[in-house]
Image: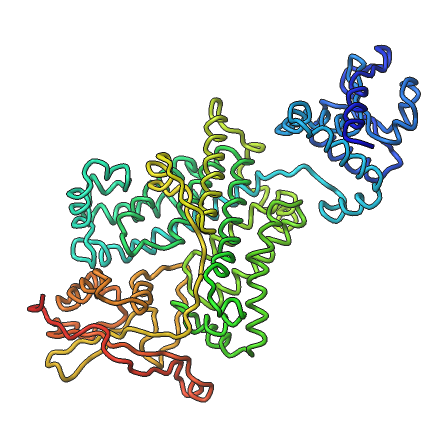
Length: 619
């Protein structure tokens, strides 16, 4: 049958009337009661439309409609209006769905989008000719008791757990803030603000929005951190959640800019973007769930893409994990054991990483059971990363983003029933407040479009020249680029800082988490983010002349500044500052099994001087 014939048939069907005597008080969908596929979806649609549409098998009502041939009932569903008009096949399906909230777009496309009706009728005819196969597929993808998806419980639990993520981030930075950006820290915030104000002028308020423009004192820094912690607890306990989410976003955006190089990590922008979507979720459940899925897709998929685009041979030949467990910034104790796995196992795991990052993300937008497959795959990958590497709350947040891939029906099978009854009453599929629908829709469209543009940039596309991008999206970090471990380092070089009073006897400064003493076991620090330790890992990959913060750090050690030395595990000069400080460069490898049995975790070899001997009289 040609497309023109299908369209003509559809038009003729729309003009059919069954007679006013047969019309009912509500629209009626008549389906084949002997067809498992027809009954399966009729029951599902009935749950969607509620009392707006009646549903009957033709075996019960065919006699009431003598103008409709039995073969027509058997061929396709029939939609009969109260005034006696009828439609069938795809048009009948879309007319029925138009009575369900949020589903009217399909009928609008059928009526107004050229070609959509013809393609829909062809697709319907194909499915109708293979009903048994599609019935089995439906059972496989949606389950026997297919319910309209609800996400009230999902949204409620997501926001409560997201409050814990925020709490981890604020407390983690709060215990380090004064040593990093305080008035006596490595990079004093007030000095940075003065420099920006002199260079940029009034535009600074738009380009770097933060509360610290009003006050950059040590008290203000601490107030922002601990206010964020308090608001996080309010969110956890569902007290003023919308206000808390808004203020949490504002405060963390302030720390993002105020933290300077110590906040320049993907997980900080990842938290900000997720925080904005969590705020949207609190106003509108359905758009919020879909936008969180979109964020998870972009994050996971682009993490795989950047590995391939980097043309790093270690990713292409699947040898990357042979180096990763040694060279990652802060390994856990289990990383030593993972590094001992056979090369074949590590290659298989690398291939599995690509599969999870490049293939499974597309299942995020598929029917529910395929979404579950994506969720479990991502959870498996993130669990393995979490066990072998210290990445603060990053993996925990990624795992939490898998929650919107489920629905309330799935969660109710694992969440204790008693706990569900204890949960506060939740609005059914929360709608935006009156007048807010357009705002929510505009924000959602902006986020999706900007996400597509960010992905295109990663693929080599030109960044868009859009004022909105420069004055809204980028400053507010509404959408960011993602992609982890694009290139794999194959050797682990560590900076060991030493101090001396006479230039002959040198004592080592010990960091809290990064490798130093070869006999010290790697620590667990999840969900804490030791930002100085992380910066030392990046510093080992760069020239110290390109790192202004490193020279400032050395100066603070020469001054024995207590706020800075508090960031370290061991200060070898607790009573008086050293006269000289230098930084040595070492190559670290994991100790062999025989050495580890003696209590050694690392082997190291001196490479040379990383930073020259200096004292306070030096420039």
